[in-house]
Image (tube, rainbow, N blue to C red; front, side, top):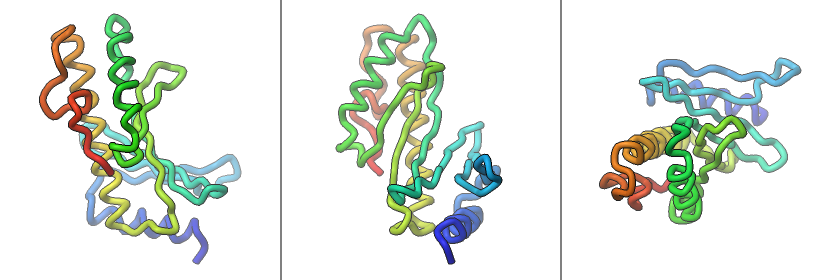
Length: 159
């Protein structure tokens, strides 16, 4: 079984364990499966792309586009969380050119099993929700500390 077949089988096995709304195979320009999008409840999507050169699955999930009026404070929070990537078990934050905040994580696919895949997706989704709460709290309480347990308040769930 080659890497792509093995990873496809892992994502197939994920369905009964995680019970997502959908698992979508993402194809490259040649029509070959190059990644997967796991659709969870409330529209949360976690994407995984197989990076063959480095032999990792690169996971990402969009947190939210920050409101324009709060962009500076939210960028500050993202930089704070990004600085702590080691404490977060390798989870990184980024902002796309379109202004969407994104969580990213990479894991070697040679060491991947369905339990680890489930754990990564669940924790990314939980961290995404926590950071979305931070975004909401910035607008609601400018200058106030982030809510208890939110990533900006050192409550990030390491992977």
